[in-house]
Image (cartoon, rainbow, N blue to C red; front, top):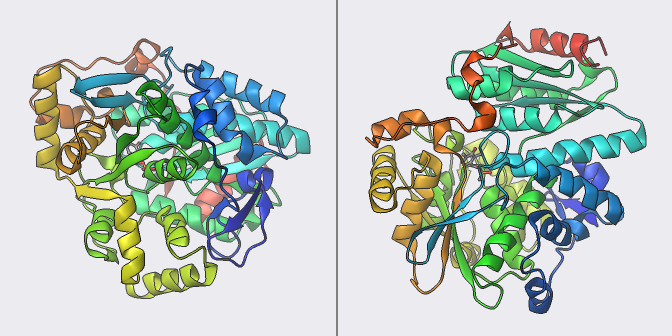
Length: 469
Ligand SMILES: *Cc1c(COP(=O)(O)O)cnc(C)c1O
């Protein structure tokens, strides 16, 4: 499988190189040159497979040429073996024909484990084969950091540096990062905000000379491998609900357009999906595009669903590329006007096409809390605020009660106690067994000033398993 850039000017790469790449050299994102397509018979024959076996069948075409089948199977078995629920992604019924797919049974209790547990193992496999080492520098406002650290902690060939804004992530989220020790794991608290952290990561990708020749790898969802891993659970849910003979709808809480884009790909790969609902919080650039053809940057609002607090959705460029007949020059033009003027609209027929593919809704904090309370009362299920946004959007945008509706349950409620408390649900939140002593564990973290040079100096002094590069 070959991968091409959404801006049309970078060389095509194979899977291995895409895994190790950040953005393409032309500033675009990598996408498969040709999407695999499965027949209904083929998909039907996967009914009842264990999760890792299904994952092998869905993802195999994306890695062919880079990873032999037997090795890929083994990697997948290990990856999903660390999840604490036998079903890996169990479906829980809320209402008639309405289901939450629980994607929070991985080590860090959010769906990001599905991709980052795999990414860590794939990196180590490929790097060992090549005899190379890489450095990861990533910024997090919460869930990505812990999932990336958990995913890479056993990697022999990866050193990982995660930047979070000092005193601005929740205690559970911080401790999920800082209590994991290893000489290749480095938590850095920056005396600044999340945007400062992200700027430093971007600047480090742009000029990698401080790495003395070591390669920098991306762990955010611009990395294709993350999207690829998320396609699998759409098949998993549909197969349990009568698919592919019957079509299924999904409602997806989203910020960076990663998870929902994976659903769009699943549909293009042959899975019958009826509705795909984009569910955002008050930071609603995606909803404003879907409802009014305005992709325009606005100020960032802090909400009760912080993992979706974004101004710009990085993966949206991958959809725009398809909407524009895969014309890289058109995308480069749109992105230029976005950079210069802070927004754009697309041609009416392209927008109409997007509206056929997706429904959307923006849900504010008050509605989020209402939904948490309502669902708890109706069914005894306690939702995290991100999942609650998905449920709200599903209920408001649903077109048919006969078609099963699956809401992606993106995080465990224990990660977001503030929202649960505000919703007035009188249920004590308990950490799962493997994290029950989280608040007693020692922490390891370095506080650094909001200064790029200081951070890069730290990375180059510790980037080789704690030793200088
Ligand atoms: C990251 C995250 C999201 C948003 O993911 P996208 O890739 O932007 O769709 C939603 N919910 C939770 C809990 C997250 O951690």
